[in-house]
Length: 278
Ligand code: C5P
Image (cartoon, rainbow, N blue to C red; front, top):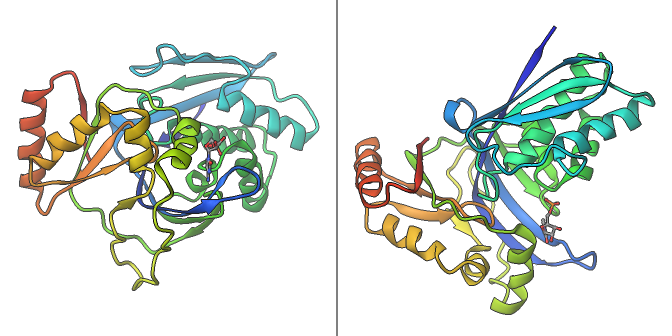
């Protein structure tokens, strides 16, 4: 029987860089919301047991992605095999809708979906704590997708805690088709300087976090054309925020009508940019 797992995108609503650690990673504090239910911004991972392990990638944003052992889905599967101490042969099919290198966590979400899919398909019975530990080995952003909802991330982002749902304002996501490399943005922090390391002050439960991303200066330094998207969004009534290390921007609006007017304006101005209303 074919099983399918949805792999949604994420939105970092607060990303503070507190400093660089001895292991080269950066100590972060994050508030992230998993964008569940946005159909045209959700990958799907399907699979069924088979005689060998294969992965096929299709979908509007699947071009150029390689289905080899460097793919996070297969890396996740290998970790499951290590944990299960046996091969887990399966035919896997990943339908990609989340753009790559966009700061929306597509690859990480696919990896989390693979852990859940394999656990279910082969009845491995791995507990949440075990899956979270495996997720952290795959990447800093993978564990938050196992929790879903709105998540506080600490450490390099991999130590995750569920937060009360924090309502999302009307959001317009804009992808300019650029690809920004996350490691180069973190490296660039050393050139542009670290933002003032101010952690999130304790907030009332469920309150909207400050709209902040400390990677913005470094990402603009690595990829100056990102500024065009920010400026186009500033010309609407929205407040732009870079998504993770880029290249998407998310603008928040006071009202749905304002967001929709901005979407119409931007798509007229730049038909080559992809837009999503969240
Ligand atoms: O953990 P992940 O593999 O997603 O991280 C990708 C890269 O981003 C790391 O190799 C590192 O260069 C950078 N990074 C960082 N600090 C973090 C998360 C990521 O420096 N907290």
